[in-house]
Amino acid sequence: MSIRQLLLLPKISIHNANAMSSPYTIGFPAMTAWLGAIHALQRHLHQHGFPEVQLAGVAVVCHQFDLQTYQGPNDFVQSIIGTANPLDKDGSRPAFIEEARCHLQVSLLVEYFGVDSDDRELLVATANQQLQRMKIAGGDVLSANALEVLAVDEDDDNDLRKVLKKLMLGYVLIERRDLMQQTMHEENKDALDALLDHLKLMHRAQQDDDGKVTWTSKRKTAGWLVPIATGFQGISELGTAKNQRDPNVPHRFAESVVTLGEFVMPYRINNLNDMLWQTHVDLEQNLYLCQTLSTATYSTSNIFGA
Image 1 (tube, helix red, strand yellow):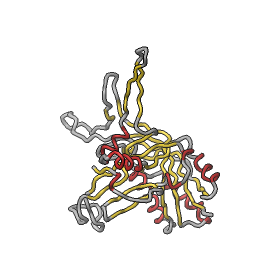
Image 2 (cartoon, rainbow, N blue to C red):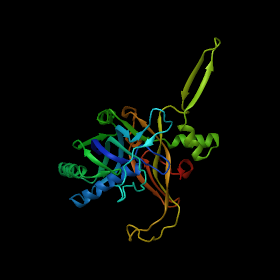
Image 3 (cartoon, one colour):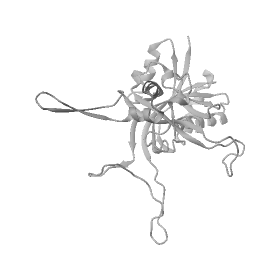
Image 4 (cartoon, one colour):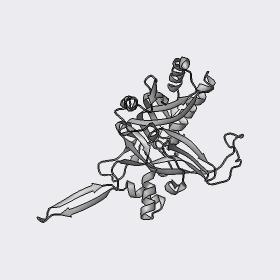
């Protein structure tokens, strides 16, 4: 029997999160942002009485999402609702860089190790206090429900169902790199074509014997598929750079890694590893990735770099 310990951070309302998930995609914040927030929480716990705690994996469940864009009555494209810098002395508006933002509500399910049962209440209290003053994905935490400590027996399906029930109503973000890999292998396409192949909406018309035309619209694969940024690939050697943030850590230039993800209802999850994300470093291929625990192999053949 294997018991897995989990922390549920339920219904976190985030204001003005970064929706520019990669240099060429706008939408749900990148997985690096969520794992970065959990890493920041772990560092705080290390400094406040829990030096052994490890927050090993995180599942992201979206309950509400509001992308800050506007589309007028006769507009073909949407425009970003941005903020502007204060006026100059002469009353003109200075230049600024548009930033895509979103308001959203999420729940985070975190697997943890290194905490005795006697210390769990103090762990929850410390994490609750820190969560209220954190930034997550560049956004401000407006409110969050109290943390819950959960335990799941991997051999008991009812345990998993009880946890998943707490995530309703919402959508769990899982990795679908397998779809890109299948398309690239079977249809001999590169990573970008395989990505777009699953995102495009195809419209078809059929005419019956009476001359009636019926239109249908569908994607290549059923499901709520989205492009997601899952990490970075180094494009320069490790070294130092002028004015780098941390002089004690080697620096390198990198580009975003984007692959396919899918939003699914929690009741469709059959294994915790399918929705828990974790960081992975592959120095041989210069990859710094976020991936689900069920992903057993790491390859650049089914991801798309900038």
